[in-house]
Length: 167
Image (tube, rainbow, N blue to C red; front, side, top):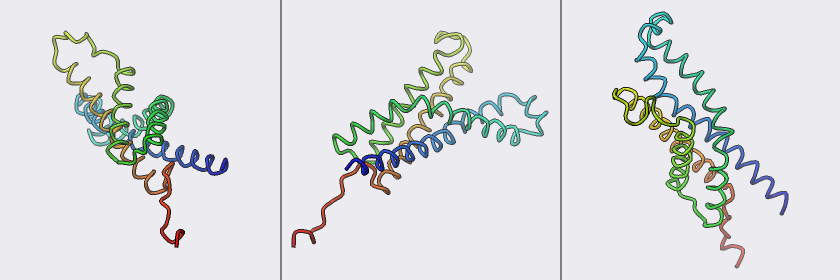
């Protein structure tokens, strides 16, 4: 019984790592694109917008994955406990939990927009919203990836009993 629990925990941990990597890859795309477009001078020095975008993208995805690995685990543990206790297995549940965890994490990490909410420039608020959108999109896709992983490998899901056992 205890060996089975350790196996389930290891599978859940592997699923968490996969979800974080997927979420980081998705979350950084809009942010890196915004930065690459908003600084054409730097992009020209780097050889164009596309190489600059990919530089930002890969470095950003690595940094975000490291940040998410250590900051998103409380939301993951809560979602996992609630899911196991209540029997939630749907991809919508895992996507919603990923979105909620990413939204809370983004608000805590990002804080308020530069200049506050009463900022005179719309760019600062739209830049802030792009960052929040990227984080939420990444969280939802990461939760979806975890849901697919959990369903595929039956992580903390009760096995259905075969009818052959009762014959």
